[in-house]
Image 1: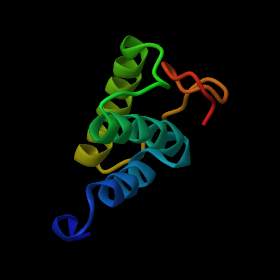
Image 2: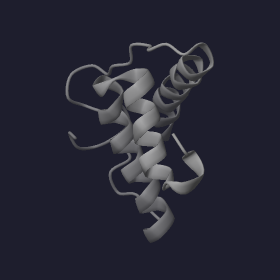
Image 3: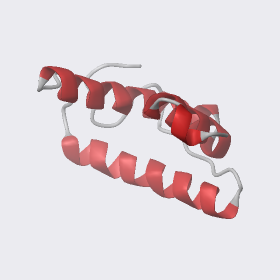
Image 4: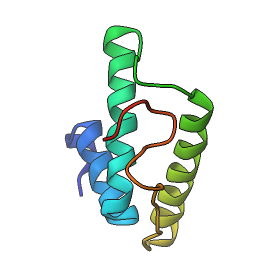
Length: 90
């Protein structure tokens, strides 16, 4: 995979699917959307708790890095349909 020639979103999606599976993609997509809204609009109306977002992202990134370092898939999931820290279901 040539990471230098692809967009950051494309690379992240590939890495998340490879090391966390489809269970990791849903929260990644939700938090990437929050990131994009913050970056392009200067605010995010769907975040209710940045503490929950930060905690869940910490878990997601930790498992992603471990998967990459040890070249194996790690389970990542959230409870139900709700992504922690967000006001809407994704």
